[in-house]
Amino acid sequence: MSYWSNIEVPPKDPEIIEIDNFERNLGEYSEDIKNVRELIRRFEVCHFKSKVHLKYLVDSIHLLYPNIVPIFIGENHISKGEGRLKRDTTGRSVLGQQYVCSLKNWLGDHSQQDSEFFSTDLNQKIEKWLNSEDLEKERLVSLLVSRLMWDWESYKKYQNNENPNELETQVYRMDICHYAFPKHLDLLLEGIGQNRPIEDFEGCGSINLETKGFIEEQFIGLCDKLRSYINKGNLDKRERLKVWLIASLAKTLKEQVGIKVALPRLK
Picture 1 (tube, one colour):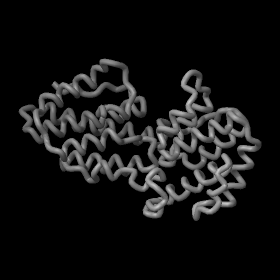
Picture 2: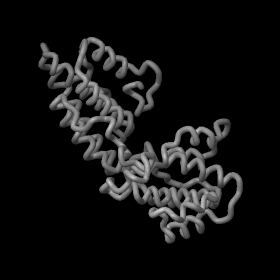
Picture 3: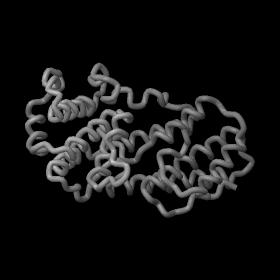
């Protein structure tokens, strides 16, 4: 998978070309370094723990050692099965599973009512929001369940690839790890029930002003660190690895929040 899969940039983006060329000139590097870079690839500014994750990333770059193995990220997500949910100390996985149970129940799978995660109160709210059934609502709810469960095979099945409307694209951007969960999931369900998209929707890829301000400050700090290394010159291998990782993180932050400032040149 590409190191840049968590950002959207035009082909032949000059900053990415420069960072990739810098990386190619590093030669071989350890699995620890690869894991730090993988953590950068997995960073999402819209995650409810983005500030904590960014601190961990900066610490990992400083140490050239990952503070968590990438494969353990998301290990308590609802897609991993109900046995993992109670390990999630944030409570989001249990709440996410409660939504999934009620949505499946609305779709006709009434065995969900036997689950320990079935919430009668939440189920009543969801039935009220979705109101009467029709084929388009069923498709969108099925798509939403697939999205929440990271069931990508079913997700593709329920997509309208030819002409997705705005409401469907909002379903695409829903996850339990987003900072606006569950508030905007509730709004989305009301929207599906009324067949109208949500105004000012906050889903995957969105940011609020507080987060954007914080990320912009961190971006400036990373750029200052880059300049200090570049101006020093005659860098050893560890320092050059840090330059690559810092530049990769700075570019990721820049694109995820839409910063217009250019990265320092690496030459």
